[in-house]
Length: 159
Image (cartoon, rainbow, N blue to C red; front, side, top):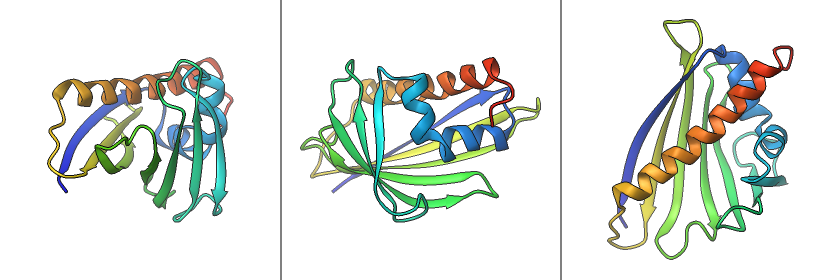
């Protein structure tokens, strides 16, 4: 098994507490509303939202994937950090054992926030992950983050 890791960073004018609440704590409800073509639904299969919680994500009509299961590894509401792993689903294919993500939202110098994400791809055997695949993953994450940002800017009283 190999591990391929990459980091990404996105800035937003939204304050960290508000962005964390929308993008992490209420993501199961919000993302299907703001990006229904990407995520159709999120169902908690076990747990209360904290570490150990397992969720079934059903992708939208436009996705090349059908479903995936995510497991919450860590959740720190005071420090705005969230760790989860994709543990099942057709996006893993025969290439990945799991994909782990660590998200941390911090205050930016301009007063908004910076969302830092570290993704680790745990491969089955020796598999080469192309820069193109990594770029595609970063673009999808950025698209979701920007959709949440747009929703919060359009609805300033939300959260």
